Length: 195
Length: 315
Image (cartoon, rainbow over all chains, first blue to last red):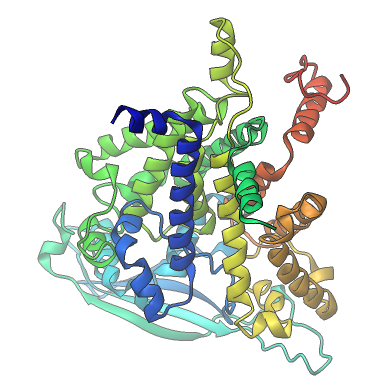
């Protein structure tokens, strides 16, 4: 036992131990980033919970494989008991000054990349209740919310034709619309501490 | 090449003692970015993102994002009151200042990483790739010798008459470098399986996203040949970012190329934190003697005495 302890005090033992950790970590991290397949799923299964718990999961598909071909923005429309409507426009970065665009990056990330998309649908009722509480008046409560996505396709680039490119400043307005979510409020939605 | 030679290369890469200047400078830059997140991007909205009355509620996150499985989240340990979350926010800012100036460097780095991890788990919908990268390198920074130089820790050690720490095994710094190479590897591999990056139209679409637009560059963005050239440059330099970057002869050329790539994106596309998280990490690839030379030149210019006497080539 003493000789085993002596061995682990040697620099070579420390280096061997660390090397083993590096190899295991890099193997699983690269496996994690590999394309989806049964082999990948089986490989990462033993470490999946550990990786997720410690935030070691990664994904670096930055601007890839495709860059989106639409411009869009999101609006929430609250309808109140008296029939009045309130339009809540989520931050539109192209209408802000440079300082606000910089400062409100987290709002851009949330309202553009998350909020209007189906991957986020479980969170839409939370968002509706959040806005309901924010704009609630005791004598005129919000009755419903609709979350609308306004969008337009970016003009297609035809690489085979020599045509003048449409500059960003002349991009078409977001004239198409989808209602992605509708919520009818319940009385308990306005209580403090409601989910 | 023999196995013994391969093992020697491995050992030299991870364990040959090295001056900790690159990782110490990286600590300062990383701390500044974290401070920017805490003060500017979270700022007065911290409670709105993470507090008890946040837009994204914890029960929904636990059910639909954690899938009812455990995740590390220090915010769960706090009393669920606005004040408790405000105190956590202040602690996060204090830790990022401590990390920047190098006070209790390793502990500060550890706290910053765990705080980032907690916030990203508590609300995963407001983080961009830069935030995720800072989280990914956080544990390695905490395990590195980032406080050995250019830090309050070093000043305190000197005042106490304790010996200066010498060169040390750079394995944690190497892991930060490897993490950056992994980013370029995956993003390159994902780009070449799409159609836009291969037909040369990707930069056209990237520069037409109105929610990300920053400063205009019409001479570039309205010229199809330049857009195509930038498209190919991006692919080539991202390929070099995980291959040629490891060779001494080509490393600095790759670093300059990557710096141009990220500065170009940062000029045209509004993605705070994102580009600078990668630009700052390029510092870890600069050779210590070159970095010390630059630091000493800057110190001379601003009238400070030489910060690192031992490795100034002009001595």
